[in-house]
Length: 142
Length: 315
Image (cartoon, rainbow over all chains, first blue to last red; front, side, top):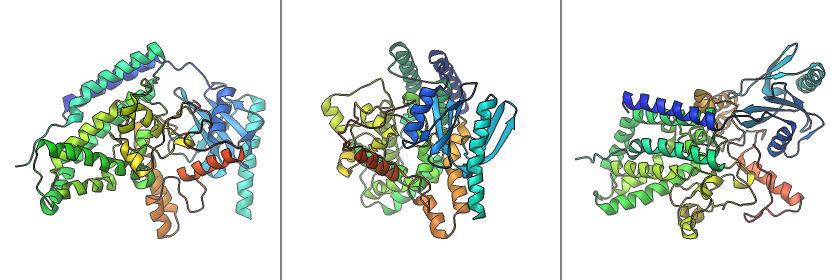
């Protein structure tokens, strides 16, 4: 593998990716229908009452009734959706900055997920996060 | 005198680029192939990285292979045309087992997972290849060919042809091939099943060129028109970063082994199927399939390969 071939390959890769981006633009944001479809596919026994969609249409937070002590976190990556069912042990930290909630995860391929939420959904998300964190603390105490 | 054969995959690179472009335009016109810019970029960059890592370790690979052949070969089969044909078939059989272990042992999965990490299935996915295959014991599966007496250069030449064959089957643009072809050869239909993460399709169709190996060894599942393939991993990656794509499973193995209690558990994190944990807190593909069967049985539905009911594909 010589340097000319490597540079030529890099140029071809950049050109093909650019063409792909132009011919297949990502136009569909995350919506409730896509969240439900992906969540149920990933966890068929999931039960939930509400879906908190980030205002940028990239991420959704789902407080789950089942499986217990978990939340659903869905993130749009390109034109596809990455779904995680997370317990407290998978959440490294959370940061709240008046209109945004950042969830830092233990996931090597998805270090943190940011949601932009208005006041009421933010309160719901905080409550759900506190609930699963408290459960873990209770377990540790026991 | 050692054989000096060309490297088929390097010669095929311009054709790969051309066909990816053609599929892209065809998909844009007809909707029968889907791409996404960042996904395509990552897939192709993984392909380039794989070529570079292969080139960097080529001399070691050849040295070890020739050492086995020169010291342990039972016969001297030479380099007649029939030896190339025999090598092609036996290398494809070796590929089947490398590939099967690549899905069933986390050590080998750490390298192979890269190829399955796109949620798209198109010709660029074919080029999304590992950078770390040399760090797995996969090379051992080729040793029987050297011991039989086939010169390593012939085996690697045939392996290159095998990879070229597998390029065209990574597409949704082709439905089914003629019945006789589907019966013997690996096809886009068979390989879509292999790349699907629907529970029904997990751990199936490991073949490279000849699908007969799957039929012989019980791992064949036909594509079901009622069950659209949904591509990617059972736990999809949350990044397009090529470095994280390349090393995420290795990182997972290292951290799991580091935290595991006892030598047995540490070893199991390396060699057991992906998803294995001592407490069953994660799911292996066997567990996912068992849950899927249980759910269908509970709902009174058929779980055979001919069954048409299963979870809906999603995007």
